[in-house]
Structures are given as C-alpha cells and as structure tokens.
Length: 282
Image (cartoon, rainbow, N blue to C red; front, side):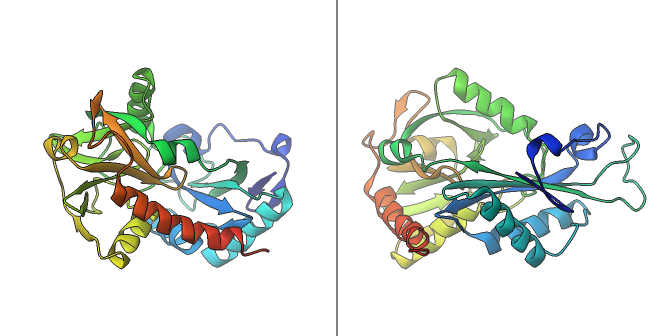
C-alpha cells in the first residue's frame, strides 16, 4: 500500500512519470520515520525537518504537515504496520525536462511502509567501519534525494565488509554515510556541529538530550581523525540504526574493542523511550 496526494493505492497501481523531477534530477526531499508498535517515533521532529528541507530548496509541500501526519497514520493503519518504518518523499513534480524550476509546479508526494525489526545484534555487539573522503555536496543539512555521494561511500564500506563509512572532509570527521557520529573521551561526548556539513539527525538530538539528563557533557564541535581513532568509545546514530557502537575503524580497535559504558548508558535511556511506545497500545 502506497500513499499519494489523492489517497491510498496498491503498489501495482502506482506509476512514476519519466519526467518527474525527482526521477530525473533528484529534485526533492524525504524522511524515514521509525514505527514502534504502530506508533511513530519523533514524528513532530521529522515533520519539522521535512518542512525545513523543502523550504531550503524552495519546494512547496502539497499540504500542511498536520494533515500529512493524519495521512501517514492512515497508511500504517491500512498496512497494519507494527514495527518498521515509513519512507516519505516529495518531489517538485512532473514537467518538461529543464534545469530551472518549472512555473507553477505541482509537487508529487509518495510514502510507503516497510516492516523492519530493531538491529539488536549490531546495537548490542557493535559494528566495524572504515574512514573515507566526504565527497558529498555542501548542503548536507538538506535531506534531499541526491544521495549518490552517500551511496558511493556506503559501497566502499560494504566492499570492506563493514557496516558504515565515517566521512572525512579534509581531516575533519563530519558524519557517517547514513548516520551521525559521536565519540566519547573522558566521559564527554563530541559530535560535529549541526551546520551545512551534516544532516541534523532526529536520533542525534535525542542522544544529546539524553546525555544532558545523565549529567554527561556534550560538545558540538568538530574533531579530527586522530581524535576519532583515539576515542574511548565511538557510536553512530540514525532512525534505523538507533545507537550503534563502533568497535573497529579501518581494522583498528576502538577503546576496549567492545561497546563502552557511556554508549550502554545512553542506550538504556533510549530503550526507555522506545518501551513507552511498545506499551502505549497495551
């Protein structure tokens, strides 16, 4: 089942026009929203970011986000989604192919659900990563459909039998190919500031909030590869990966080589937030 502007349709009924600007230019924005026990996690924050991304590329959303939230609830009810995610994208719509914006464009909205469990093995045991050059454009704060740079970096990680690529702009660590990056040093968390070089992740902000409630210092400032490799702990965060420890980078052990105590402490508090949703319908 897929949501379009004018209702819910089965996948076989949905057709993408070859001149949709999302298909030809990546001219659009998107969100991935986690669902636990049929309940959205961080919906208001996702809608706020969607509005911001659309505003930054001068894209008019087809209707207000409060109505969009109602439609997305209809979608998960129709698909009976309990645990998984909703993918949502808005493009500038269908128009004769030209680089500049069309006059009076009509945006195209599509959303669908996907059942996915929590990646508990990786959350509990940690993952391996590589470092690679950040080859993306300079507006990474916009959650746009232009993800080829991210895709190429993720492919390099896969070819190295790793789960994530940690990106370096010069010698500065920015984020992962599909995650935000935190390091822990002397019980202080460091993460790149939310500027145009990274996407300000929803989970990233939850982690910062949790850390502050746990009296853990958080510094939103840039750090280099030396700090990354010498960190006591490293974790990557995202809607789908939640809070995942990184135990090796470039085949070198990070800290003790196991998920660290600060990471575990934050995971416990994150799990408490998830548990509220898991029990909400009971």
